[in-house]
Image (tube, rainbow, N blue to C red):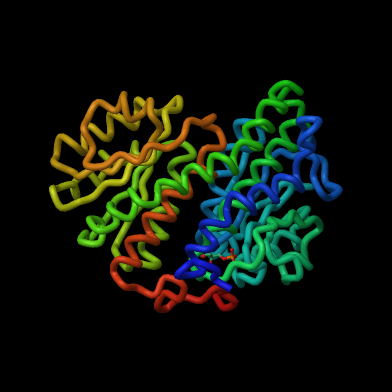
Length: 365
Ligand code: F6R
């Protein structure tokens, strides 16, 4: 049921504060200010030398975001690859290693093939899945459910933010088990996670501004998305969402790679969506943005009040997000990114819930 919404995708975008909140209640002891996983980890976080992650599409971008969290918080090196590459690479895996799979459906053929390879190589298998009755869930040693509820829209939205939320909690659990963070740090991170649903609700209020922006974007032939750090996977996700449902060509790039090629594309016709909360990397991204502005590129900046004040240019549009701790900001910044794709596709009259050539669950390779 779509309720008051025109499409399942809109309904699922709006459900995010609730389902992320629900996911958090399963992974946190909110009173104690600690992570509390809803399963028994059958592996020893402390003994791991590396975490190997594989997934496809949006789930891969969730894994890529988590790489930053596991490495920063838990000091655990992460190797991540798209499942269709990993499965044929014959990658050597560490003895007693942990392989992590991320999948909404739990039926994605390439991801499942990686899981079976990992098993054959005697890895512990942990999967972050939304459908807990799925093949991937059944074949895993440990299942970390995402609790997004059924996702009907082909383009993933609420499953993505619930994957991110679950992965953030797993990274914190790993950090504690590995002695990489203090109890005070953990409590502070938990408070920041608890704040997410409220921040997401605020971000949803940006919809009217994004709707106006979408009219402009609908005229573009190509759109570039830029971000650094955890905003880089968000740039990839933004480009994927826009391609999938509006059929506008889009690319996501790490902002620092701009001058290694894509800057050649910049002209007055090229919208460049820059995702840049005012974090430790902001100034670096701002200087990339200034390079784009100097070449006449049309910048749409997604940032917070401080970033808007300190970006050093006048973007064509600025989407001002609420203030938040930067570490888990992607979980909130995902929302304007989804709304941009959604509103653009709706304005163009596309079938957002059933985009051409796509299936919700990709069970063939
Ligand atoms: C994008 C999208 C796809 C899926 C991918 C993996 O909006 O939905 O890229 O994320 O096909 O699917 P799951 O998560 O079911 O393994």
